[in-house]
Image 1 (spheres, rainbow, N blue to C red):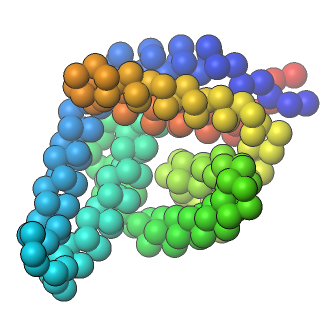
Image 2: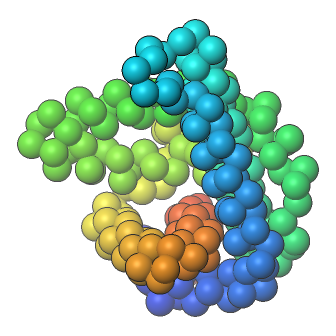
Amino acid sequence: MKRKLVYSDILRTVWKALLSQIWLLAGLTIGITIIISLLFIFAVPAKGETLRMSGIVVFAICFFLCGIFYMGFLKNCFQTLDGEEAQFSAYGQVSRKIIEFIVAYIILSIIVFVGTLFLVIPGIYLALRLQFFVAAMVEDNAGIFESLKRSWDITRGYTLDLFVLSLISIAIFMIGMIAFLAGIFVAAPMTELIYCATYRKLTSPIAT
């Protein structure tokens, strides 16, 4: 029996969770954005200068930190869905998975790129099917190939549903940007909560 992905149920769950910790999640989003932005500013060479080794190092550090911040924020989103307060310790916990995350991300990027070469649609399909590898790492401590396989398995038969949810997330993000940009700091955590809630729904036992 196939479980149902009811969009309204997912959005209702996400909205309730978001309201419970909206200031904390928005604050984390703002803080992470500022840190990453400052790192990129220092890494970008001044006009007329070439990219130096120091800039490359900063870019590498930024990439690592982006991965840690993203996984840590997802961990916070899972905590929020559980009715718990988001913990800063989550970022230290997920930092041990950063190398696995980067390797899996590179593998996914290559797969999606190759799929995109075939008239784009295969690339979108593969991205939708493999998108939950990060959630599997954060939530279930899965490894590189285990996380990719888990995402592939749980999304079988749900491609259209996931495409619709992706469009909903994009719409929410765009509305946040239109709302004087400040709304993006509410829209961003909401889209990640949708991602986490969908993963939870796909991995939950099927009701009989």
